[in-house]
Length: 283
Image 1 (spheres, helix red, strand yellow):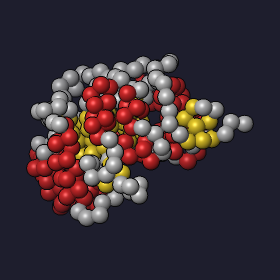
Image 2 (cartoon, one colour):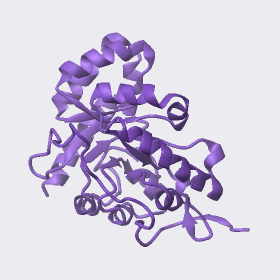
Image 3 (cartoon, rainbow, N blue to C red):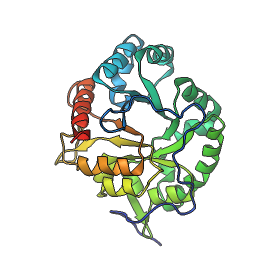
């Protein structure tokens, strides 16, 4: 039996897949390019999930993100109780929705409904943020790869593209191959690599990004402290010069700032990350 281990990866990931980042109809122009770097900066709404519980405050949150300088949001956690308020606030905020996180279970249950919401928001990418525990094995990751073929094909009917976001468990290895490799080698799914979780698992984020040229339209940017806690971009120990250069080389379109837990106001954390990232992009 193969032993599960976790560790750094090497080599390319183009075998048996369609490696591409192309624009579906109506999505050929990306708004909000960072003027110095030719990259788009978005805020992941999971960071401000607690502030979005009140429908009356949704507009203020989106307005603040726009004032900070973000070009877009990556949608997550828009519950039915705030759906109408979110739609209205997004339409008038000056922000675009570059992508949405949608669970595998939701796509399996009613793909058309989930795709319809993404189209309504103007998203281009549908991101599966994680996998249920029953997929956390060599066979499970390969099973998801096969299922992703059908999901990606169905989403193409809505001019949407399927993306997968990693945590650390996908870096566990069986027989020399990680779960993330098994997913990417067996399906057309694209990647939204997460810099924090890659480093947490012992991998080099820049190395992983360089392995996916043309196949990583989005990246999650969050930093790591010495004690491995999440922190604002530029406030921790990750090699941002190397990561951002790798993103340019890979053709990444969206730099998505996320912080799962913040010491203070999450909007202040997103503000600091944006300011630090803007400086890093021009140095």
